[in-house]
Image 1 (tube, rainbow, N blue to C red):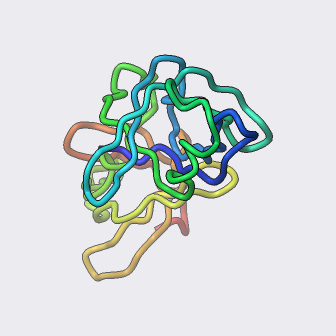
Image 2: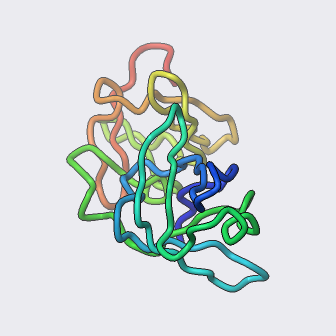
Length: 162
């Protein structure tokens, strides 16, 4: 289950909704199946139409042609179960695959574990907790992150980084 958005409001009177897109991948497309949770149960929708408006998506679900039908879903989070691994391009990673990964320097010195990914305007920072409990931030860019392997991340530190 992946949270991919949030229904922020209705749009017009013909059943469209405004959705704030939380996904790094294109999950809102015609015929895609998404759902909301109502009292722990999945309520599925099929996307009939989608378009961008400012920083939101305007989405029309199949069978919901009136504002009154869609109004009860306002404010709910939108989810998808569809995997997106086939959409990952080289040097793209799921956050979950990076968390708790060991970090080593390119000279094979253990640095610590990734505990958090922090979005910043320039990209992301890896928050690494060292063995002494101190935390360091490493920009998640090729200059500092040499390789992301199955069992570890290899970084190229510069003086003062760690």
